[in-house]
Length: 115
Length: 110
Image (tube, rainbow over all chains, first blue to last red; front, side, top):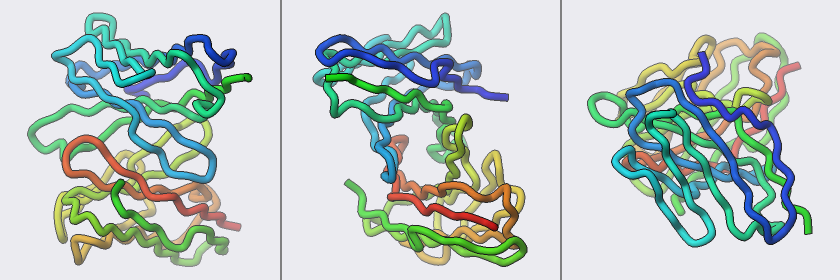
């Protein structure tokens, strides 16, 4: 049972345009969400996060939106750059208790930004 | 950027042999995790540790065991490697909910 889903395996965008990556979740206990970026032959690196008490969090060119009622989050990258080409993973956590910081990851979306 | 190293970085082994992967951190993070990455599955949690000698199973723990005798080291052992365990393995550490990942180990079981 995939609790975190990224339904688009790939996305292709022109440099300078907006990239929108989507993620859906099913577990209503999730209250903290993260996006990671991964280049080939490297480990994932943390990009941005959002708590369930917010609906938007912004960091430079990256903005994450959370729609709790729809159990949906999205990552917007504006403007997109060729160096943003990578695999993007969304992840979710149910904080508190004995969660021990465990994350549940989506399958990943391959973003390609064309010059 | 947490100092996390994994060894070996690449390994080819035969079916039925035991294999141990090592994760070493220099940041004194309490939490450590082992994941495997496979096409179409993203990152799946194998085992995790919430302190020295404190470990528990993740969602894909069958065929794997772990040990953590020191804060800085987290070992993943494949008791008897199978072809289905061919994968890329990542170690991660955390203080809270933002995990920091190592560079990965590519394991091939023939």
